[in-house]
Amino acid sequence: MSKNDKVSNSVIRRLPRYYRFLGEVLSEGIGKISSRELAERMKVTASQIRQDLNCFGGFGQQGYGYNVSELREEIGEILGVNKELPAVLIGAGNLGRALAVHLDYEKYGCRLCGVFDINEKLAGTVLGSMTVQPMSELGSFCENELPVIAILCIPREAAPEVCERLSELGIKAFWNFSHYDITLEKIPGAVVENVHLGDSLMALCYKINNPEKRPDTEDSEQ
Image (cartoon, rainbow, N blue to C red; front, top):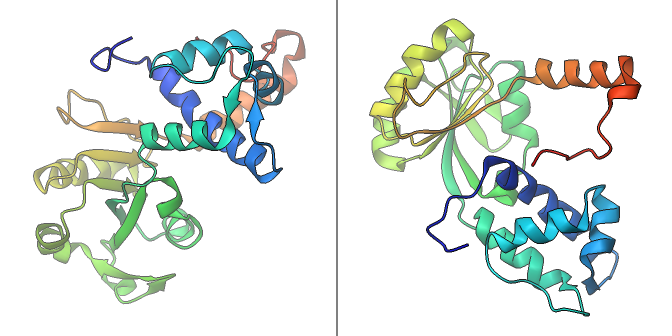
């Protein structure tokens, strides 16, 4: 596969898991690992790992396996974990506060540079290293700081207008917890991750209630 070929969404979603598991292997002092050994840890197949990594070029050596540190660094480079893309968080309610305080953004390729809320009573509230700002200051802030990612922790009904405004201000990507599904038709050219925590919980309940229909692996999507 050449660099210009598109990579499937399922492969992209597995990359962070590879990065995380390789970090765990590295912390155990293991310097090299075979695709079979990594597959056993991750509950996927060795061929799946090889196919996924082949999307980005050759890794590892026949009969040797993968250099753990080098492979993790390569995957981190692919994911862009060292880019520190500037991000703004919109909505300082319970979920917004938790994401502002407890998530180590730099570890995942972002840099939280601002938190905003429409409730002016929250302006000045300190959340970790951030101070909540009123939405009225969002335009001038974006002009100065040039964030490219927006984290949406706002009510569903507010999302369409806020998304349109953010797009006008130069936001290119949305990590969306609003329960409003942002589509590319609504915001052309945007990169979107619509996160529905309830969907994940219901999927868990399904697996409990239907044990005979569980997939053989936790990451069986092709």
